[in-house]
Length: 425
Image (cartoon, rainbow, N blue to C red; front, side, top):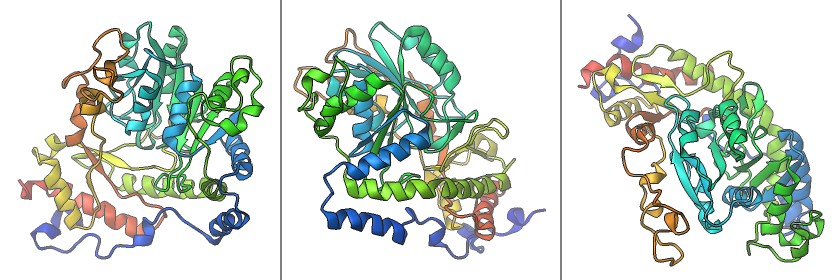
């Protein structure tokens, strides 16, 4: 019998599986003297509001992403709005996106007079379920917003097939999945345009920054025209050149160059750091393979897909395999072992008042349907997989270094609880 099955649970007076925390194992971002020097150089030159450093970053990021164009933004939310505008989303239009994601994947559409129609997610990947997309398409649908949720690549092949069949643009929100691969291809380089956050908590961190990447010149130039007034002299396409000098959207989306400077350093270091994170996280999950009540949120081995920097890692909780042990009790007991866990999923947006009752701009009706041709609000029960995640999703430690001893202790914390769940009921 394993130690995990016999050693007394810490919650019941036994020894902790993780006797002492190693905070360096989780510290993020990793800031070096090179980061500091790059930021100080911009600060001392007084170039915080310029674009010269951002342009260098854009060239490097485009090369990393394999894109023809990259455009820096003040944050990821602005980049997603720019991507929507670049794709031609306008008043009365609809985008299809997951409800289970950070709000910036959907709410910027409100600024364009557009709205979101939510599709359900796959229970394993927690990304858009291609089987739930097509029946939601109407003549007003203009784009599909794909979110690679918590680092897991969405199933892009069938999504792209659906989009091409119906003449829709595909926007990839890569904020959770920098560097992740889908069947060997870099996410963010598959759809028509990608946008991503590089805020300080992301797996590729730069303080506060966003990036848009695309091969489509029209999307790129529209995005410039919409929110980058100081760069409109670069526009060449007849659709946007008459408006040079002012931002069409009245937005100032320029990136702050202190963040751009940090991002350049972080981008150079990221492939090696990402590789170590992947080794560490896979080591953790490999040790829990076959454990009742808990499953890894990661692509199948041999699929050619990876989790990138494994942002906001989580696992699938299966209470029915542990005699119905409530998720909060499981988390409490793991945390008593030092295991660092808790409920992890976002609140489904389709159930939030902002998407149902808020009249943001004084139109006399909820903004979600202000310019729609029907009431497309979605009640509880319409997206069953998304709605069930709160009780079936747990966060796990996000290891930044491959340290086998410490990682083994955290794995032991989860194993102790799962193998002794009967003592907690």
